[in-house]
Length: 158
Image 1 (cartoon, rainbow, N blue to C red):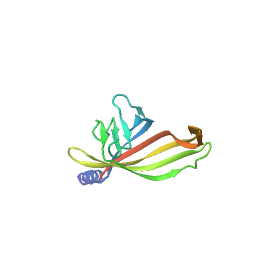
Image 2: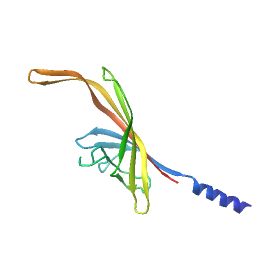
Image 3: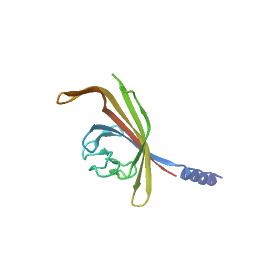
Image 4: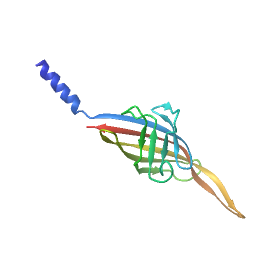
């Protein structure tokens, strides 16, 4: 009886989906990418982890590089991510804040298996009043300016 219970318990554990996840915060955008400033609450040091909407060198789709892969303990590079805007809130006016929430899906091929990391990002923008003049003509008004961003990804195994 005890042996049967142990076998049932092992089967139950083996059939339960296992998930690994990671979260990250983004810093100041550059020409092609936004630096990852922390991962799982730990400031990133060494390397240049990044979230790159147009690829690492501006020549392809969304790519993400993180310093720590929860599955392998090494760095995690995702070359073929897709992002879909789920909500975009904010009315452009004085003091307004805009929040853009997107879902993410990033397939990764490991040496012995493949997994798709899924999750999302949240980007925040503030309304800022600007004047732009060309010659005698000026345009004045509010524009959205990047404030902060964060994301999270999970890999689920059945």
